[in-house]
Image 1 (cartoon, rainbow, N blue to C red):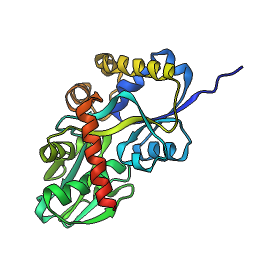
Image 2: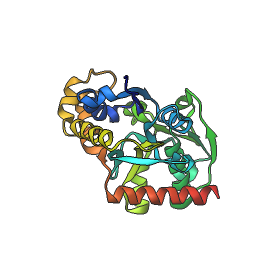
Image 3: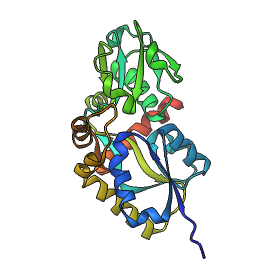
Image 4: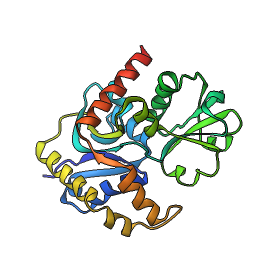
Amino acid sequence: MRVKKIKVSAVSYLNTLPFIYGINNSEVMEEIDLSLDIPSDCAKKILSGEVDLGLVPIAILPQLKEYHIISDYCIGAEGKVDSVALYSDVPLNEIEYIYLDYQSRTSINLVQILAENHWKIAPNWIEATKGFENKISGKTAGVIIGDRTFNLSKKYQYKYDLSEEWMGFTGLPFVFACWVSNKELPQSFITNFNKALEKGVCNINKVVLRYNETDVSKIILENYLTKNISYTFDASKQKAVDKFLGFIKRKDS
């Protein structure tokens, strides 16, 4: 009898490479059907039930009828993350419009929370579409996330790292995505899956060695994965998730 595989959606960004390495080099790969997606598509798949487990933006958790954070690992940061930022040619108090990156709901909520509660600004929000990065100029800023950010530091005058700003505001780390299931999964699978993730996180040097350079050098990638991304989902990160979701609840009420 053929065992039904667990459908899994993981983020296709560079920060997920350790997870993918661990999964691909573990027996758990035989138990899953894996797809790689941008964060917003991970969210859509877990919400629709197209997948059973996903590395999903934490902003969607309140929308799930049932959810279980099944892993001790996440995509988080303790301070500067470097790949989720507000880019602008003018300082915060002069910004009039902000494009919101279509690839992640969490980053959209985060910048709106920071604008209202931390920066005390009230810009006009624009839902972005592909190519919006080229429309950032003058008093129009934009939130850009993921691998596209690595070569943007010199393109715009100002860069406000959203995770760093969150820590300055709350004193807490930030969690961008967690491994979340929309149903109960077998404990044996959860144990094996976590071992696979651990294997990847503990072998970042091997991950970098296997990386085929594109727009990011191996030196930059290793620095990013070891110094900017914090993979352990601990008590302080759970507290950060609870605080963030509390802000979303108040914002949407």
